[in-house]
Image (tube, rainbow, N blue to C red):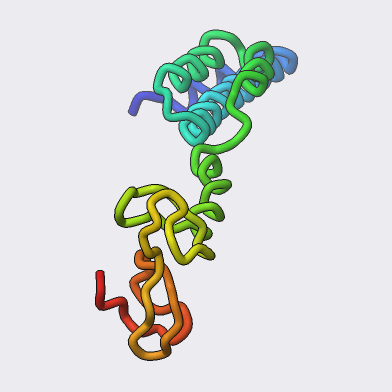
Length: 148
């Protein structure tokens, strides 16, 4: 075994209280430093796809102490997470349909494309309601879109 328990206890008993307190604070500081390096790595990976930014962020906290460089990281990091950046466009996607002729985007309320005049909706074979071509099923009765 690498450590001899008797040597460790005799070494600790010869130390003064202030030396032990210093060692405890040093160990706690190093543990917090490692924690913040791992935390910054995880946070930078969730906020940016740029490996250069992730590398720079971690190096910033590794070589500068967390006390100095951690607040700087909080200032330069992106405000939002990667997965949150596309949430604003989901509502727009749900309210639009792409024309099958000119491939331009139109609102789902329109019956014809405003750019080329092509029909944007088909009639359901079961309930006779109109729904956009890109829907796989009728929004009213759930019948499959056979024309796809």
